[in-house]
Image (cartoon, rainbow, N blue to C red):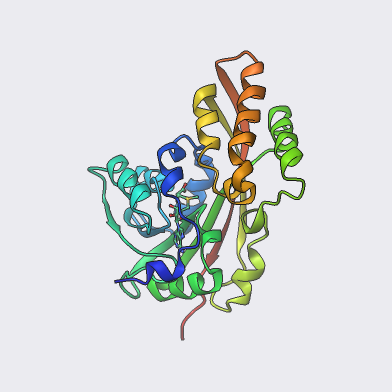
Amino acid sequence: MPAVEKYVKWDYTDLAATYTQRPSYAPTAIDQIVEATGKQGPRVADVGAGNAHLTVDLLARGCVVDAVEPNEAMRTIGIERTEGGTVTWHVGVGEDTGLETDAYDLVTFGSSFATTDRLLALKETARILRERGWFTCIWNHRDLNDPIQNEVETIIRRRIPDYGYGVRREDQAPVIIESGLFEQPTTVREPVLHRVPVEDWLAAWRSHGILESQAGDRFPAILEDIDAYVRSLGSDQLEIPYETVGWIARLRPRR
Ligand SMILES: C[S@@+](CC[C@H](N)C(=O)[O-])C[C@H]1O[C@@H](n2cnc3c(N)ncnc32)[C@H](O)[C@@H]1O
């Protein structure tokens, strides 16, 4: 059994129910990631697969996926969402996937790389990848120039003045290079517009792990402020711009 407890620092149990409302990744970004493998129906390990947000996109592009997820609540929803697909679910973590050695064309981390000890996760990725296979990590970044996002940012900073995004908004190239296992990564940046009912967008804030962890007992009050502001706009639907940002890196020859 993989050493799940040793490595899970972020408990997604309470966030699972609303996580499915989070915005999808830009389709053009996922196309680039899958096409990098140069294969039809590549074998993919999707790590920290959660509610299957990225897994669904990979399956839609013909990938054969092993989805790895430590959290039972997230995994249960992920399994439901991918029923009938070419996917097998596993309990594991990025640092210890429990998957077989030398088996995958691509290992993906959808918004999950920052939950891991990244150097250990890269080492584990290199172990399970086939010769010259590919690693990728992606996130959706809120576009803070958008007026609604900007106001939400102000609301958050009113209660958490030193609010930070942590590793998820950092350049991932230095840690990938530091591992010594991968070639120079390329970056993917693709805009994506999230058209969403107001209620769903507000629900998605309830699954925001980074905000929850930095807000502590201020989390409910911040959510109330965001609710009040967004409802004051008087619209049932929102159009919220995001940017899918990712890094793609190829395993160095093992020799
Ligand atoms: C932000 S969610 C991302 C879910 C999904 N991959 C997506 O694209 O939206 C992060 C997931 O990473 C999982 N996680 C937490 N610690 C982890 C670890 N050490 N290794 C892998 N996944 C981990 C969480 O349980 C959660 O399901």
